[in-house]
Image 1 (tube, rainbow, N blue to C red):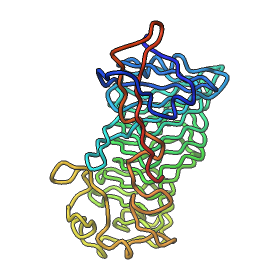
Image 2: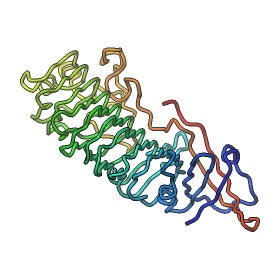
Image 3: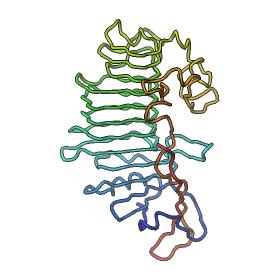
Image 4: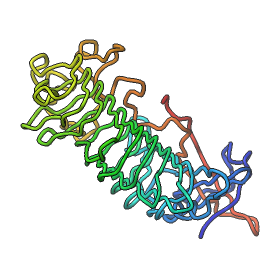
Length: 344
């Protein structure tokens, strides 16, 4: 295990040493008045292992690639540099191998907040008791699996290349806001699920009977939103939203009003692919943002609502970490550079 201890004051500024020799990925753990920096590919794993159980630890990950930390069964806040590279703003992503596994035990139901991290695989909530208060912000995953009962889950401004899968489990106060994903469904009866200002790419299969507000939903295929849903101010085919009159519809924008995705989006792409034709992440700006709006007048899709699409983390980001070539016996000099985050 590679680590060093720093005072809180030292972490607030750049630690200038002697000649810098190399950039290294780091995980900085703040636990009360103690701050510890772990470095190397296992730094995230080491920080999770060292995180306390009596207070909520805060872990800040530098840009770069980390090995998977294993199951997270402690209450912790995790902040990365972002889930995708942004060359225009000189941002490199924080990437972690494998799944994010948030796991409750008979003794502990962890409260986890994570922002600005890309996991190469999936996000999985599982365990032996209800998990409450999970918050996922500006992250990237494959599929989200709700494999245990959950309460007060918030997922916002995040990208999923796959689905949001309820795994036949109960989810109460489950909010997905300003996210991109394929489809959502499979929560157990009695679940309370709201989908606000998202882009739902999948058009060939249905979505669950939930509350949909201000979304852009693919209108291809022959399947509808499941019966029992409420759909307000969404951009999609109204027949697909209605499910033969079995769903409540208010203020939606039928395909006859916007013809196709090419005319809907400012970039002119006739699809809901996450990347544009040049291979860059799309901004999702509408060609007529004042026409297709929710009840409050903000644009439908991820650019509207309370949390408009912005993949850059709102928290300060560690942009570089260097280990000094010269050290005093018993110490290790490190220089850490951080920049302020974006607006939320």
